[in-house]
Length: 266
Ligand SMILES: [Zn+2]
Ligand SMILES: [Zn+2]
Image 1 (cartoon, protein in one colour):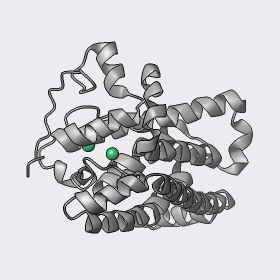
Image 2 (cartoon, protein in one colour; image 1 turned 180 degrees about the vertical axis):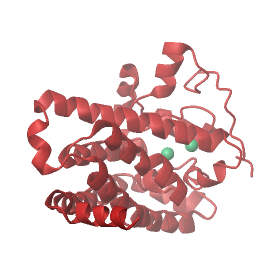
Image 3 (cartoon, helix red, strand yellow; image 1 turned 180 degrees about the horizontal axis):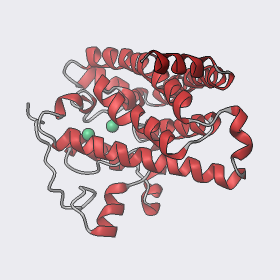
């Protein structure tokens, strides 16, 4: 046991681990801060929606204050540690970067992480709607039903943030083995996409994404209202892809979902 502990300590003290830890904390901080700044900008564009929550939704002002606090908690208390750990354990260190294989390899790795993240998000999301007892972890996000502002994108429970948002990134890093820079770029892309599908003003633009099997703001706001369809987010429209590839009951638009919103009424 002692030797395992000593080996772990020695590994942590090694120059490459020290570099990875520094890169992980700096990258995690940057990703969290970037997301919060973009959330604030998009929220300013969505002030009509914010106003409606305050004026028309029962308990709206309290819900809105809570969701802002949850945004900070999730990004800083949960997001940065998981991000740092993923970089330390699964990303290539700066020393290994000469093995990366050019721009095409970088683009493929980024697409790979996005795809793996979306698949894991999809499974976690669908489980939170259909698995007995799971909806309680997702209920808070669906309190934004008719008025959906950008800040609601990360207004999710601790369990949801870990299982559906950040652990899928760590698992994708484990499988793809990106550099920290590739990982950070991908986290930012997914994060911005998640904010945009919760931004009403983006709706007229995003509807064009539907033609190329990507998730639009309309797809996701339909999910917020109807609950038993359109589980895919934030980038690839996996409901539609699965429907068309294997004719599944994945619950996309017109997908004939068998999944139920178990526990929704609870
Ligand atoms: Zn949502
Ligand atoms: Zn949902």
